[in-house]
Length: 306
Image (spheres, one colour):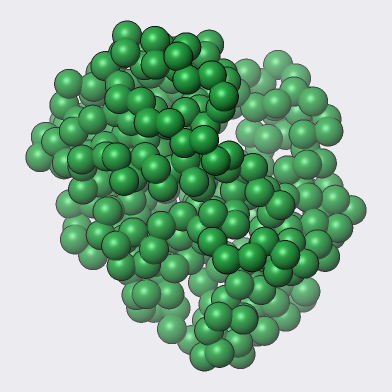
């Protein structure tokens, strides 16, 4: 694919890491095709061992930022503040980017009305049933071709379902953080809620009238857990973050309450997903998901202020 040079010059890649040096090495190595073209590559160390992270990062031309307070949202926010670009592309340390990942991810941002782009996530290995299950779940969230969601078109509904395409593979304009706020530090790994920071920022963009794009061709490969307990944890944190977000906006925005209640009622009726998104290929483990959904409002309330 032809690389959109001007957009690449405006792009900072942010990689958050917690004591996974082998993974970080592979991740940064996969960025070499675009390293010279982007504004900078920021590695945010969110673990206790800074020196080894600095050593790995230097070998790949990345700048290291240390964030001592644990939590992926805090780490990403530190990366945003340190970055020089006007576009932030996010990766986790246990992900490897396809060669055309970044050009495909940022290309929709040629349209100034688009504030964020979400790419797809593939499995590093499908050799075990748990990795296969995670891969099925990720694939079920994505269409076969690019889709645009327009926040202005959702004025009579609560666009939570659209925001759920948010994941660890995204590009977001700095303008979006200036207008709608940074990642909410009550959400994400390292918090009581455990996830949901990406859908939360996309939801704010949609509610503010911005556009987001889903581009499944912008692909990264992720090292999924092979432990069966990981699927149960994923189901629990998914349910928890979902209801925690509903609680957040129900309490914060009185004008949204009727729309949120209608959305919650539609979920209880198990309406099919919008035609833009395919139906799930694999059922989420129900009991952990329900327990997480019950815990979500409490988790949000005891998390305090961001």
